[in-house]
Length: 491
Image 1 (cartoon, one colour):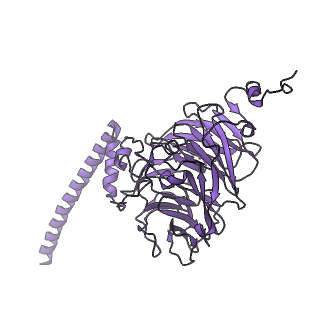
Image 2 (tube, one colour):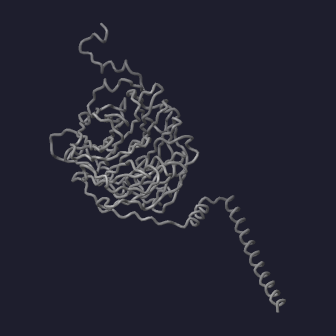
């Protein structure tokens, strides 16, 4: 009797014959495997209309960013604006219809492409724009009363539009920007300086850039279909995979808390794919999955505390979620939350902004054409007590190190906080920018990088300066003598 005909023999017992060992390629895996997980029954729920943000003209710019950024105080949304670029910043409790005259952040001269809240200060937000600049803004504690057009600092260094902005996870005032000039710049926002410029690493447009957990590495996805893992301070590529996804449409790459890289992209047949990579051995993927044939770019949002990845496709009307584990197939499909309306963009709340009393493990802010709709993800539990297994200590708002320490080579792990009694926001200090003398900065950089060759050059330059000074001095004396002679002749 064949295996299929034997009573009591389930599909799971046939698994060894069906699948070969890693590298794993499970086109149909998500529908077949049922496994125990506390997140299997997570359910999503869209909030009622009175808790949505209505009458917002969400940006129509053709750029695959999320258009929305959220923290425990504010939701920021990139909007359509005439004569430049603007975004709204709303206190979370400011739901309902938003007046057309509501003040905006409007200092850019071109459309805003990306925004990101500072993880160490809930009132500081950075924006990148088509006008080639990055601007950092300080939002008043209770939100905007009048339009904000004066940023704390303008960071200029890109020659084409800036489409990616992301703050360092553990070092204060360190900001990464990536532009369509294929250049990545890492800034010290506290001094307004471009400290690191990663040139000649990406031959084409950069689709995504992401820090790892302690901010010592970044991973990027590029239009040349290559995923790169980069040590930014050494300015070197430590791992790369060409044709990580063979399709021509945009890819995304994010770091997981264990150091692996999770990517989304498209196959040669235009199927959407997920893949998991080990940066130390990127020849073969740990795991690859095909999903569907939709053409919306998948935006991944990752929760490092629970190892759950949420995928929101642009133009989709669903959020799929997966658990990442150490056992094959490593990426386990959990469930899909579906609504009627397609999403234009998506904001993702940090863990400290969630309601732990309702077992809320994620909250999204879904952008429609004219509104922003919060969606909460909940694990059903009967007990009202704090659920330790759902809320391990999470990254808090305190930075581990200062910008100067990080640029000197130090690393700091995230400073964790407990959510047992809920998160109580502390007082944020104002962002102060101390501009250094650019000439001093250039001199210090030169002295830092000085080797035997540079020292010889410097000595040469100093000698030349000395000889020029001597020449000027002798010419001055000669001029004085000539003036004296002329005055005698005149007499």
